Length: 443
Ligand SMILES: Cc1ncc(COP(=O)(O)O)c(C=O)c1O
Ligand SMILES: [Zn+2]
Image 1 (cartoon, rainbow, N blue to C red):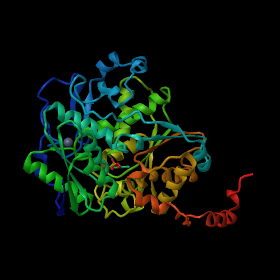
Image 2: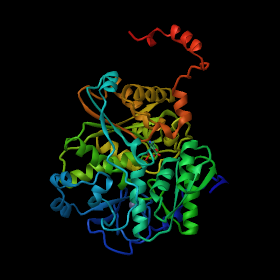
Image 3: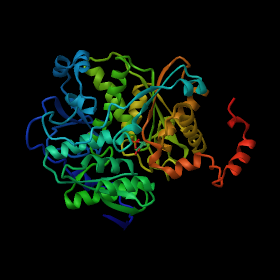
Image 4: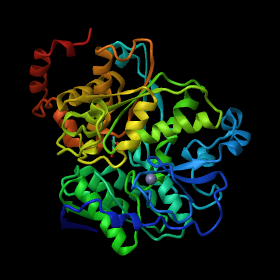
């Protein structure tokens, strides 16, 4: 069912701190030590802690028992694991490996060698991690799968979440058939394909007459008032856990070699912080011994994190405006951790215009057959700019993460594409057209 509701400018208020993650009623998660605040470093138990740090409102991160994991995890054991989905990484996720999980199986998306695109950008070792090939066609499936598994294992019957569109459609896809009801808050102006997915997967859809940030705040308030479990990106610490599996796959698919540079588009910053955590967790588990540089790409009209990173000042909200709806964010909800990922990895941020994003959509599609939505192509636009400016070397091994499929936003794709030729259903009309297009004449 879809309902349209009025937006409101809810604030990220102190009362939100009192919202607690539901408890794990059943088994202990033996590999997890607990949750840690990224800002004040205070530690909390996994069971029944708040979504944010109750002391300073910082984002929480899951800490694992790496002393134990170093003894149990090995490259060889991963090689023997026939599960080609993100569930092959259960030991590094905050869920019970023997517990219930969604039926959809995201992850193990292709890592494509992008020779032609690389040549166009002056890069000799470029790869695309195509996460548009996930079940609901975006990287967000990884986060939603882990949050759903957590909810199912806690016996929760309703999950609420706010989203620009992809997080919600992935939540609805993961919830399909599980008996857990997804209730999602999306901007009324979200691309129709994303809303169609939601409705078809059977979610309760609240089309908020406002932007993503208003939908996010309304969802927070609603979860507090009605006691709903909340999937909001960055706010729920398990979203980052799902997203980190993309990095695990990149490492395994490269035969345990670590790329030099990983490029990703950024809105809330949760994909970036998640990817970075994946590399850190693999290193802490003794599975790799170096780390890549992380590069964040933001749209010029939504660049709160990039601006703060280059100025060294705190992140200040912006008034977002970009064709790339998935990264159109006023106030990044995982901005501090994203910024820390850039700093720790000695990476950097790039800002691109909507025209550069449209150009990158054409480039990906025509050179590699990869159909990326605007927010996903933004990573390639940023990579093109960074390579041209000499910030990435030609011989660097580079991965650009394609975070969502172009089918998600057909109107966006049509803005990047030329118009089709119109032709009457007659051979005479076609002959006239062929005459005008010499390249159609085959030898
Ligand atoms: C396709 C796509 N790319 C990039 C992003 C940005 O992720 P984040 O908001 O975690 O920075 C999103 C988030 O919705 C997305 O759907
Ligand atoms: Zn704190």
